[in-house]
Image (cartoon, rainbow, N blue to C red):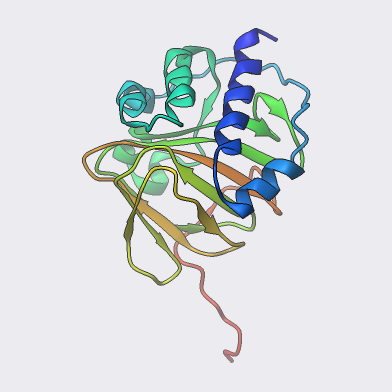
Length: 205
């Protein structure tokens, strides 16, 4: 395994360790960071063209991770859960993720997945939900986030956004791209999200 992957995991871990939040701190302590490597072929996506701007926008504590990913983008395995049939071609050209560890990432972990997601400017990631609980930490600010039946609210870089199991959520970028760190736990770690809001049918005949 080339040393860049070990450095990727170290920088990801270091970024999480700097977050002043009990939920994140508990998860960082729970994760076994001595993970076996998984050999993966690199895969590039169109959204990687936003990485240099993301590295410029990232605050000081997130810049080492953002700059490292930008510099090594062509050596990493980027993925997409959706297709143009789901959200359109424009979305697919501006969306992608890098799983650092999990059931399909550069490091093997069957309990929790961690990685980075990219959205280009002026993109709506519509309401979706999944069984796994999710923690997001934006590394760039300015994106609007919505959870459940609430309104969209702008979130700053470094904020912790927690989505419980099967809670609908959506994102809407403005003039700048988004990179966010994510952790998934407590459900299928490679599950495709269900598109649309979660409908509670309890109590209905």
